[in-house]
Image (cartoon, rainbow, N blue to C red; front, side, top):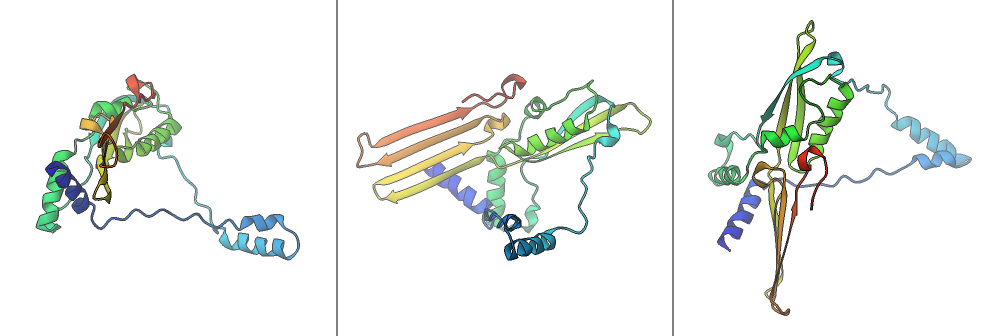
Length: 230
């Protein structure tokens, strides 16, 4: 029980001040273009007003290295946060240290297992872009960057994979009444392996038995197959 209180105190202190806001969907006004008469004119007016003057072109940063042979791949994990602890209050500084203690950085082997390419392959710009996006969509990765280093005259290139973890531990405590409570504890990146563990517990004095337990394990990308096992 003391561990759970410490755990939830850590979560509260470390993430104090951060709110998750769900973006509200924008109202779709372009259906007016399908109407007739005055409504159609109104729709055209709205459509013109909301269009950007100069469309922004997205340039693939890997195009300059297209066709070069990948000589080496280096993994550079950065943990889940970089904090100037001197600017934190003593209480939050302690919470930050506790978070560092409980969090285990993603293992380089796990990052390498999720690559779409390997040493000796030719660089395909779209493949590198897709892989960078794939890393960012992983539940235990907050951000990822693929950097290519190569001399303009060389046919070889070195690749650096920079990743930033999310704080993988989470949980919830729901007390419905003095006789009923639910506890959820999860780890999205168990010991840095990318494996997800979840534990649920229910206490209800009106039930028989009084205690209920449950859990789940998700092993991701088994043997580089990109298949998960639950």
